[in-house]
Image 1 (cartoon, helix red, strand yellow):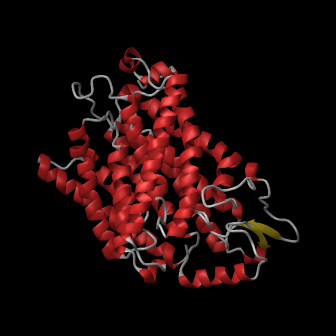
Image 2 (cartoon, helix red, strand yellow):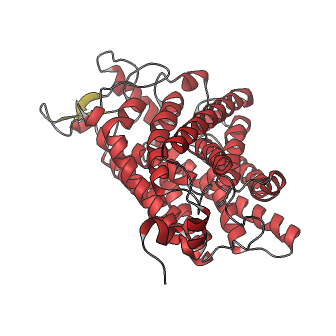
Image 3 (tube, helix red, strand yellow):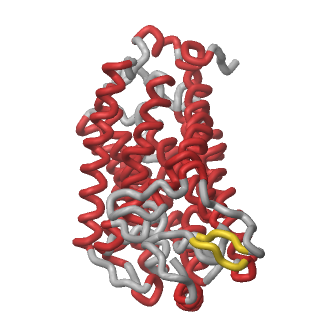
Length: 434
């Protein structure tokens, strides 16, 4: 994912190396590493990690009831730790090491073969990011591996056992996220070869997380008292702070996916801001018309919807496309988080599917409509994008359902009604917010 100049440079570098298997990291001279690219990617990595802890944790934590706020924060924090270990041990290797069109190999298990400086000043780089050290590329991709399962938790907030959540996320990340990421992003992945465009995670992150969240919400069932008792957010100040952190961190998410400090990264940053602002206004306007007042929760949700929808398109569209994507995403996600959910009567607690699933689908499809060849080097195809959406949703949906059902049989998924009424903070963690 480079500008034309950077792409030519990368091709020149790769052409000077021995023939390699698709996606195989290699040793390069330390002098070929770009200090600017490396600094930007290290910054982007920190920004994306900041999106989960504390951004998403606060965004979700403010939307639940007071008796469940610590349990909700704990989910994001524990997932961050768990995904870090899994990515290091096997996840990175199966996603980005040379393998076949369906899954990567085992070359990087426990980071075997990843070098920092050796052989007279040489270090390893990945072909997707040939101007930065491979440990930086590995860390940047780890932050995506962290936030994706954390997003799912919003769909089943306030009712899932912590033990079941940890087991599900461990299995789901390796059996769903890893193969889909390999299909879409790894050299030789079958979706990549088909021409599916996903600059920073519309399919891999948001459709995956949204569909898994919807399946989890349906399998677990509604919260006790859902539709009969008030379940208003306990602290919208936390939610708005979290949404603001997500907005800022998302520049690392999208602009960082250029894997360089170049013109394409700048374009991705620009369209991210434009689409987000447009979506926030669209959601706010739709809510204002429908309910008579614009809410803080509404404009924050609209901004996140815009961030989600522009993610797959960020490296392919111009400002006009960003405005269109933001407008459509804001309106469609408002419907998905309100009208669709209420019509079908499912309990997606914090609108994980309504925002991330619906927004990811909208963004992935519209990438095929608004992609500009002079920016991304490719023409968009709505049919190809639809293929990526359908395959990701079906595979994720089926795999998530099977995993949830198996875990339910073995250890159970849900706390009891009495425990749910008491609150997960006390029941699961022995703590409470005073």
